Length: 379
Image (cartoon, rainbow, N blue to C red):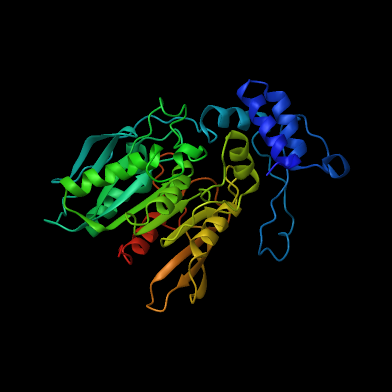
């Protein structure tokens, strides 16, 4: 669509790629807030800092006594996206995941027509001869499989439930910040790019390990969450369910500029429907990926479904209030779940503080996702 906004964002992409960040920043600010000159807040010392609160659909009124929260400088965020697709986080010293006696944390690699990726595979001590479910975990930017395994605690749950857990690694050579390239058209569809490589990893595991091909699931955080949604849309015959934590809907971006806009202001996404059962976690204080993106993922997952009943529950976990909305089928299975966590930022809920991007305050996203996944099989 050749609208003024589209033309402006295209020009912002060109300016960003050329390193002209001041001009790109000013252009994007004017596109996202054309009335700023008439309704601007009091100026700050940093002209690149945007302040304010978001209004989400379903909010009956703004919270009382809200205090504007400074977001990362627009130019700094744009620079980070240009380098890799998501704002980066300070790196932490590597930590080695715990390994119970009899368990294995294998270092493997897949190579195919669309590329090569290394990955870690957790094989629990509590293993079965065959038919183990497989969960593919896609890490966020700057993370590693080992870091993500520690932060999410999925290996411990694998022991409890007897699951295989795979952690594909995004190398720095593919993305400067080790982000999955969710915003590039060549990495958003079946049979090409990163989705084809991840599907190839699943095929290798199913062939060589006791994995049940009907019970394969994919989940991810941030850029990994966006990539997990893409995998569910592109390969519904492979993945029986999807988990998206702090991610974005399928088709929410086509380049750097639209990635920035989606992250900052939210996107409804476009393209293929997310037809597999989907569970979404998103912190309502997420200043990196707008919480509206979580609602958009759920909307995509419900496009092809009807006749579902809705149940909404309020809860509190370790100091965090949350709302869980379930869309339930006639057979009693939850087909879509949306967990909205008050006060939570851009971090894995209920995670281990030894990992990056974690919020130990809960609720436990890993356990909730695995419980959701195990209700479903591919047909």
